[in-house]
Length: 296
Image (cartoon, rainbow, N blue to C red):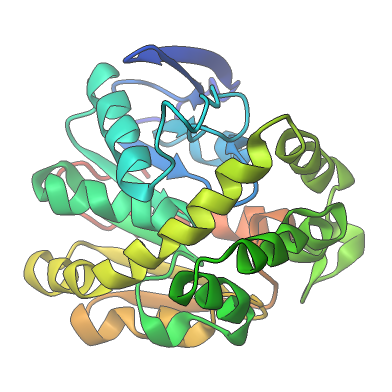
């Protein structure tokens, strides 16, 4: 099959139980699908350079999670901001778009969302690309200590302490730490900051910080999934990530010996500096598998 020449992204919204979910789509819908799931504190905008590279070979879908990007951010009094609820919405989103079999690119928050989908419907997942998408306790750095204190003692004081993670300085640092700052487009963290500072969004993010403990509790379930189903897995890791250590990448091979691990000389937001390299690795990786593989 010849590569698809139409790589221009399209921008859509999908109603999911009254919520407007924004998403980017590119490539031939008849080709194998890759679902791109972003993390904190960003959106599908993080995939802006990767999508044109991949969409010549596959169908690419990149939604914004509720509370992020251009998707709705419903009031936390009526919408519980937990990772189970985010997974519920994305599960319904994939069903609304008719995605019955797809690979996933999971990053940061996208990992516990995507891995919940895999637990619920292992038959739908053709492969997993984890880019700094953690599922092992050894992958958690000391940078998690303030959040872990909040898990142990969810006091007002510990909650307020975490607002430092929502500052412009912290967001910019997440993008530039461990990499060449001159290669990081300033619109990336500037857009994130603008969306984080919307009215009510601070408490949304603090609620998710608290609920992240539920993901760590589910790590054994995720690991059982890897052992039982052994999905084709590629772990691409910015090795200077201040939150998710390379040990978290290497741990995939413990439960899935066929998992492929590659460490990249960059930080948390690896796509800012290594999108071309990551794109090639994903295309080669997915092309190696049988039904649902991408065209060469």
